[in-house]
Image (cartoon, rainbow, N blue to C red; front, side, top):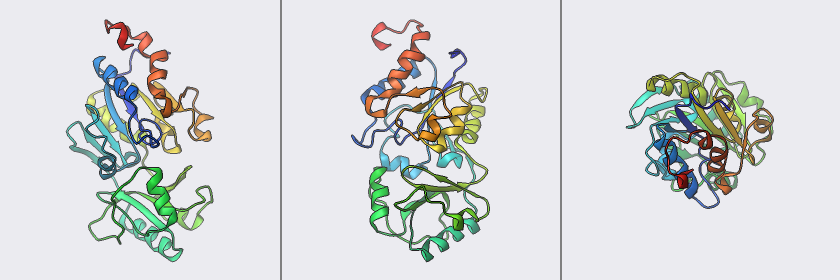
Length: 272
């Protein structure tokens, strides 16, 4: 693998960097982040989560992060949390999503400059549990709310929802645990390009790790990209490199075999 030009690393959170069964970033993943920093590589979170949901998970203080791509590219922040880019779901489209969900009695889990749920029911509670979300309110939307991700809390996440697909300016990702609605013209990779430009780097000089459909474009455009072995089969079919599960601290193992081995630059042997 040609890794010499990699200058940044981007990590999906749920099921990739963060283990929801143990409610933590594995220790070896934290060690891996330190090792990358020692080699001068910038480390960044690249998540479908909006900023309030990264705060909710409690991982912002776990490492010396250099940047954040949030809401699948809807928000980009620098190291200090200063907003570099924002492009959220248009208000009319968001209103249509809420109206159609209400008519069908579908609960919504939404995030942007806020985070809340619209219904306290079984599918919504399951969604919150799957993603280790605690303490978010159940309420209606207000005029000041803006949204980057609107998730349908339904039990069948592979069932097509044409009534939502017809809403302008949005795209729908049918994931394993949720149906996520976001802007049509955004992706994690678009957010990565903003941050790489901010760093002064070529847009492809990065490594990336993910497990779901919203990670596919960022993995395809990375100089070194790997999909988690227990991730979405549709992603695994398109990405050559597969990484052991987060339950095994798989990113550490993958990089030890495929990156750190090629980067012996004076780092002590017990740190490789």
